Image (cartoon, rainbow, N blue to C red; front, top):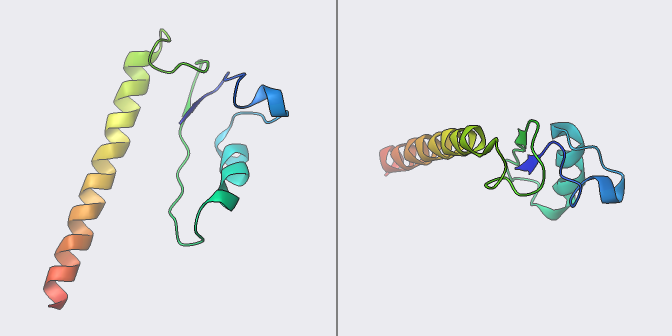
Length: 83
């Protein structure tokens, strides 16, 4: 997750902070099988949790974590059924 106006991670390298650009820049650092997801916090700078948008950013993070938890439960259930 990056802030839309994160000058530390994006503007310095000329990268515009949007989902597609960040995913393309990060993809080489992950396994081809990784399910890379990029979240961009709108109207936010580098320090996500100190920005005035922190409550909304926190909600997006919690929502994303919830989907990971549900996916992990599904995978675990499918593995158990195969045994």
